[in-house]
Length: 219
Image (cartoon, rainbow, N blue to C red):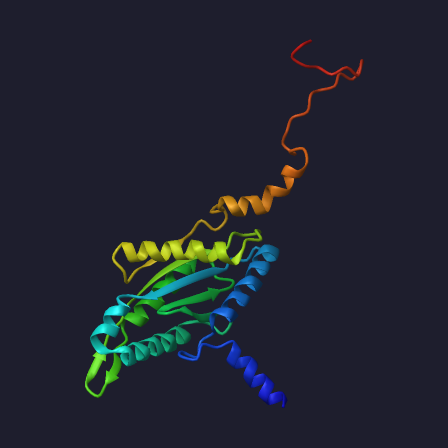
């Protein structure tokens, strides 16, 4: 009975098409990583990846070939990451990779290696038919020492993915502003509580030590 339960739990966390983590598991990992970054300040990188011109692959070779491309790219991504990393199918032809403790100095190199490895694939989609695929990658670091949110982190990485697409596809765009790239909503999460009382940065009027009177413009 326990083995059946364990099997069902595993299935609930995996994408049936690719065998990767599904979106539900990915979001759980992302929330856990946000907590870790907020506590330790260790750099964590989120990559959003999208197969270029995937609709064209489906239209030209059929949906079965599209499924084979998805599976081949998924296997490739799994080989490119560390055991501590998480790769998931985010939806459709889009994937996500969570890289904890990934130094800013190496993040782009890791993403570039993933891109080049996928580009080198020759994917068999029939007895004598092969397809080559490329991916575009956008990445964002979680702000250090900040308790952000999963939607904000995903949005930042997605924006870089859209930029990679708009600049020609088959490329990597990484946000290096780990500590200072904080959105208005993230700032509100950080400092919003200060608005409940007197702002800490307001200067108080000076009090004269001798008389105890308050100095002001009218004196």
